Image (cartoon, rainbow, N blue to C red; front, top):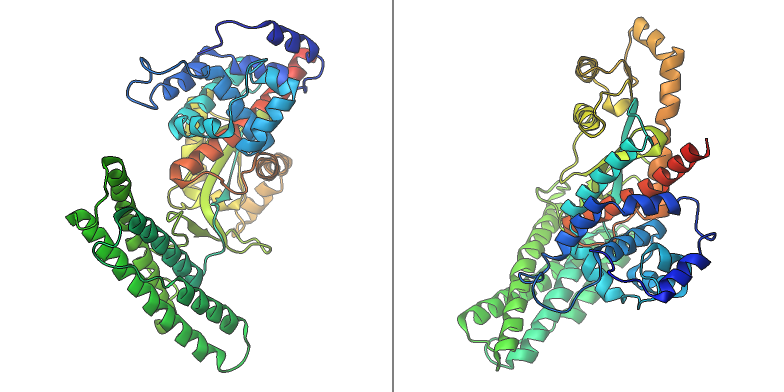
Length: 468
């Protein structure tokens, strides 16, 4: 789990950079040295392959893997930048425990990141919060909660661009199959140029303000759908021929590759057929609310989320909940598979607060989207003394008077810190857009970003306590 033996260079580096560290690093270093956190990463790495514990050369220590991933998200770097910066900076070498050893390459660190899955990241975060509670960095007397959107890494979705993406992927995969299997079975017809021209025609017609543009747009979409349908039919024939053994490779290894390409076709074809279905519904029937709408072929779980922002009315990603206690420490985060209403999240957030910190908060603050009379009564039944959630639609004079009291206004002022925390995690730790793939990647990205932010805030809180 840890480096067994330190070299002379490690001690020299530690001595030279002792006064160059940032203020939060010393206390964050102590937190990351926790045995349970390091053990969780070690167990995750041991599950990469069935016999990782007993075979192969010794891998990197778990503490090095953990600290490299944390540093990546603290600085919001790519794996390539992380490799370069750790190689060049003695402070980062000391913090990550790389020391005088060779810095791992970017691809290796990327594989470690996948191995440390979302469940392990959640486990690390929970342990981090409990350590902060034990060190007195927070008491749990106050709680604030808010939601935001973390966008998936996709381009702006239009029906024509999605169809173009699908055709490009299918043709590219079928070319690889033809390279391996030769000319046996169905022959490939490359329609990529035709589809590209139709997509350009649609873009020109959509920009035009002439009366005939609508008719041109409909005709161009009809031609694009026809070409896409032909490519999909060809992909289905390729897949059937691979399964039947008509298209086969000359070696076992190439045959495995061929079967993998057939599985890629089987996975992509239903997605493209759904895009064709929703395109026909919108263009020819005017139905913009097709069931099971797909916004990206590569991130099919992406949702359209409208949060009422003037600058960005539509966001494409996942809804994320962040709830905090004192000292700006996020005690819980959640990535939702489907967007819930904010009012459904309040009571569960209070229960999570009790489970993590061992007490009910005295004050709960949130914005008006979390309000309901049922929520307010349930929160007070759980021991919350002051529920600071405004009811914008109330006509009750007594309720309006309550919302103008000093404690309520002060609670709402403290609640606005949620907006600042969301802004910092997006700007400093990259939670504006997820760079990892899939639902598991989204959870890892959000979790590691929250852990990175918490480490900085916990370090600063502990530093203040030590200075008193």
